[in-house]
Image 1 (cartoon, chains in turn brown, cyan):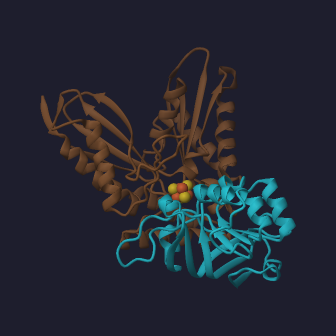
Image 2 (tube, rainbow over the protein chains, first blue to last red; image 1 turned 45 degrees about the vertical axis):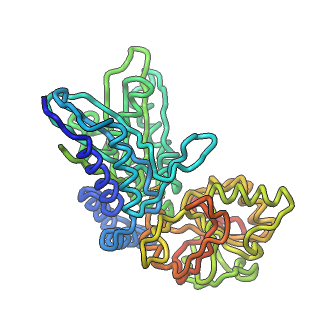
Image 3 (cartoon, rainbow over the protein chains, first blue to last red; image 1 turned 30 degrees about the vertical axis):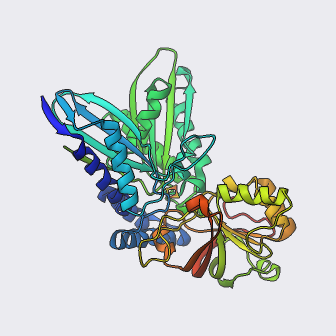
Length: 280
Length: 174
Ligand code: SF4
């Protein structure tokens, strides 16, 4: 049994809220730079150059990359031999979010009740996904999610007979519908299989993968590449103003499913695909 | 084509802009997003007056992040315009001339724009740190209690935008 104080969790979350909002991970910066290199539309090139400049201003001056500093999505992978001390784990996560958003001059974008819509003024609660794993480690991933792109995400309950073709078509149609609203070039997270909620969670997790890295299964990796090329042929381009860089990457995660179903979730993320992970 | 425009945006100037033009905007613009639009519409329905002169005004669909000490404003990029579509035709009727945001507009909005000769500009989404450098002054003029969603009066200088839908209804996204 390993004891870990929840204060450590608060502190890690607080720091990651700020870090993710000022600096994109190296893999995201790399694919953006590559896009600038391959973009054929002059306006698209100009926009990608603005995005690069935006990233350097954000990092240097600690101004959020985007004013939508997101709803905090937190993944906790907790070793089964861990015992948290010093209070409630969920409260510790939320305290970290509240502190980080305040200290970091980040926008508070969360309303308490989805219908009454009063701002909670500290960006809590976070969306927390907890998983119990082997061992005595704790892995915390924080991914602030902007809603321009979140709003364009979709779940499709396909029939088994729709097969690979059906899946491919639905992913491309979701990207097409997202268009300029989702601040392209986008990163597309896809979950295939499981149940209604499982595929959505897989799609969200797919966004956390190192950008552009393919799925280990060859047939899924091939589908990722095919969908990416098809999306880029749509011509939506940077900021939706035309060009050959509509998506930066397509990441697909899969899970076993029922004999009667083929669930597919498409979680769209903009070019500000923020996430960071620490291990305690 | 690259064009420099100043606000208030008159009908004559609006008519010279075409979808695809790259513009630099200088002058006063007003931020408003979902909650502020809802309130403005309620104000109009109750026969009240809007918190800023709407004739020839330009609205920026923006909810900035908070400013640090010494900064004019925090990150300040556009939000998705489509959420304002339900409220927009009434504001166009009242004289609103320009809107800055990102993303698609409804057929109703485009029809109203053609009728009233208004222009829809896109600012680059996710470039809020860079765009904040073009805002030289910022004050909250209404709906203070809405926080980031309050109406801010913004002075912009050479604010970069692209004409997406012009007053003839030509649409760069199409
Ligand atoms: S979709 Fe992404 S880049 Fe666009 S405004 Fe939202 S968070 Fe920012």
